[in-house]
Image 1 (cartoon, rainbow, N blue to C red):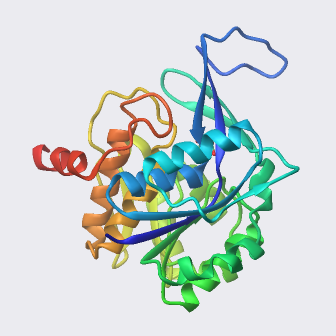
Image 2: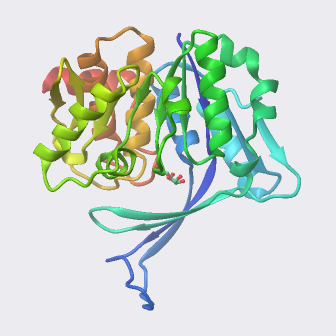
Length: 305
Ligand code: RIB
């Protein structure tokens, strides 16, 4: 079993099913409301764990009912939760998700996720040092992201930065990220360029990769698959066609599965194909984590393709 450490957010997702996203100043009536465990960190931890990895989650929740539910759930999934700090004062992170038939919009209130600090990293340094791969995202303080990537890199641990929610990324952070995995709109923010079409996106990917040779860029493109740059050319792995129920957590599944592939020494092509297949399966069920597949399920779908 490979050891995966995830440093990131834990949220309670309040999912509102709506026909469409409300306009500014408008009130609309929704259909259903569900409370589901989420947070990009927790989702990525579950994705990696379902694929058969030994996963440790480092993050922070409040000492409240939502925090209790998040921890109970992660423990039941088989994730090591010893490195999750519980803050006495602040509430557990909350994401309000407006889910339409085809897509979603999310508002995140970080709450305790903002208390995932350098001190917590130092306290859990041994878990990080012994990991095969570490994943982090941007729903925790940026100083923590920068610090944990540096610590991991200094200790020879492979690192994946999932730059979501997107913001400009400093050179100090990039220096210690072996892989970066934005979606198309996140890549627009990171590269500072807007793309009219796929050709412009690919041109920007090639340029970005030339300027940042030490960080491998992988762009997730929804139904268009996922792409990376190899010897100045963009390689695209097509998405597997599935019946889409809920796209929430597809990117997180991709990252958890990419961590599986990269820690098992898959080639770049194999790792991205595997991650894409896992992400495709994840959208066939409602909720961020419900459809996250087991290893055999990903293998089966790749075999029959
Ligand atoms: O990536 C999906 C996740 O983003 C949701 O689970 C929500 O918690 C937000 O963090």
